[in-house]
Length: 109
Image (cartoon, rainbow, N blue to C red; front, side):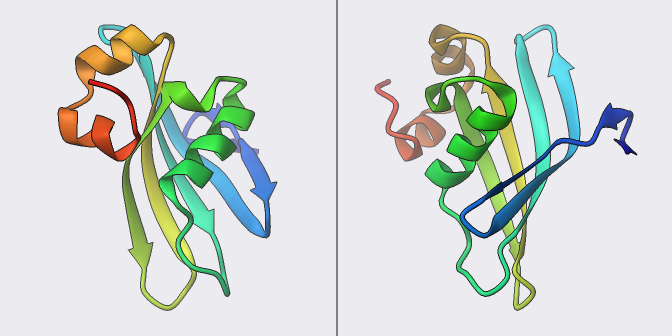
């Protein structure tokens, strides 16, 4: 199945289903910008760490190279929209992400 011009990417972890809605490679910054939907019915909104680890497994990268920029939860339906960046190396991650986002992820500035 094709979604937004890409082959559908999906992973199930601990009762949650993460499905990639769109992805775009930013060649200037050298990162993959991902939009995904997480279905977590009957459970709380997944943490940034949980989502980063699921995306790391999906893209075969280290969780330390993934930054979850935003999680938007839909009230009462167990669905969250996720915006994340997948970097190629930690130096680019540190140079392009804002300080407050790095602090949320425990990355030394």
